[in-house]
Image (cartoon, rainbow, N blue to C red; front, side, top):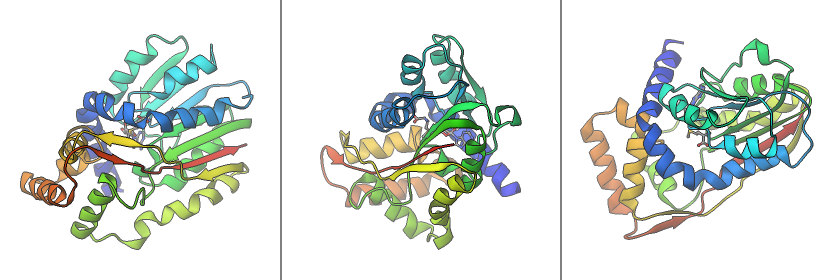
Length: 266
Ligand SMILES: C[S@@+](CC[C@H](N)C(=O)[O-])C[C@H]1O[C@@H](n2cnc3c(N)ncnc32)[C@H](O)[C@@H]1O
């Protein structure tokens, strides 16, 4: 429990430090997955009720949702105050939208059975108990409501900067098998709460970095490596960067990572 509290506090601080750089570097590169997650909700008729966006970060989901579901209450929830501050720059321009600071693992009871949709992109893999989170998100849906989740699974590619960093981190922190075991339990978490699983896929899109160093530095300053950088000393991060660069290709680096998409209807 104490471990989870410390981990959440470090994560919140990391994402607050990262927020502005994340918006510049990662939001454009992650946009195809955000659009896919929103499409999965808005391509169907959705019932009345609010749309929740757990782990909204700077809230890139908002403009797409608001354009397709005008007049709808759309609420983003994020652990990080810095992320929510930037999300509020987006919500300020959208009537009935809001962004709030909170832990999205267990949604507030006021949402239970009321929501038209829950859409979450690239947050689930950071939540201490992702299976519990999915259960809570399904419980928030009203009958006919839609769940659309995109997250980074443990394995995202066989070749590319994500794979190289994952391999280097496994060498430094030998992965325990159960670290990613939760990924096998997500479908049952959906169906066990009375929802129907509609899609469980591994959508890939191309991504480009001007160099291997550009990706590493963006990740350590404003992306997924920020929390690690906060928990380790400068020598650790310097060694990691040096070994990564020694194994990475020269010049522009293109890759095709896959995320995992899970959609369901209650
Ligand atoms: C990679 S960002 C994704 C943001 C946005 N959905 C996007 O696609 O660009 C992940 C976000 O999840 C948030 N997050 C991580 N754990 C969380 C939790 N337990 N509750 C709420 N937000 C969380 C982080 O603060 C961060 O802003």
